[in-house]
Length: 342
Image 1 (cartoon, rainbow, N blue to C red):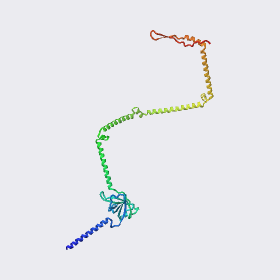
Image 2: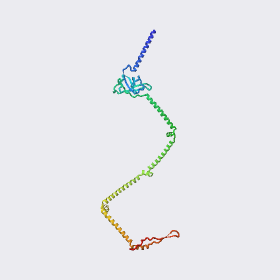
Image 3: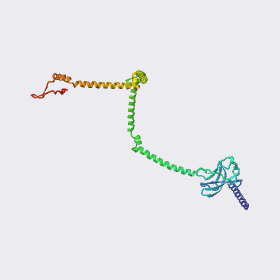
Image 4: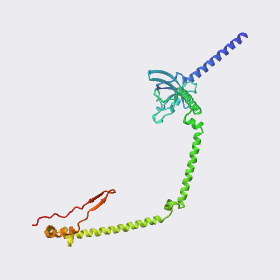
């Protein structure tokens, strides 16, 4: 009975181990797609960001395969081979893009396949799928760290600026801490209100017709006078036009008429005649002047001139300068000296 129990226990243990081994083989094989029909596709990456063989290939949130192989072919090209279940190839097309993602913030890397255009055809064995830039969590974390550093610096600068505002002597600090500017603004406001009041009073007087400006704005008598002046200027202009027309007619008559003045202006013969007359008159005047001089120089005229001069001979004048001094001024005889008779 003891041997039978030991043999039974051994058989149960071996059977359980075999069952566990078969289940493990099945699970591992199903995970590695060992028991289904698969195809292999490839993608060329510049940076696989820590992707390793055995990582999951996911399509539309479903695990459809695994990374089979990773090999470096150049310094900027890494070929990733992926095993995909054939049952999902009906939904993956030749232009479906591939990108490297991450499961959560701390999870491992995975390969994500997006949908494509059915017109390009279904993916086939050995096809190379185009690569899209995926979201790099580490790069995002690095950028976030850099942004946080910059934010710290900005906050420090803001603290420094606010400290200067509180304790500094700048314009903004004075605006925040000093009340002089507020007082000055209040005074300026009062002055402005006073000026507005003055302007209001002035406009009120103008509207009420006070003063010359008010009369000019509200009274129309000035406008009436200006209209009269304008009418007078128009009348004067018309009269001036009439005078100009008359002058034009006179000038036309002088230029084209038959009177004496037109003949003097236009007739050469009459002009010569007038010149001859003027010359004769000048000659007559010269002869009369010579005759008068001859008469003035005759002895009869001089004789009568002497008698008249004697009658009109001026008496000597006496001028007193000082007391007891006397100066006698005799007149000078300005008569024409005697000349011998001819």
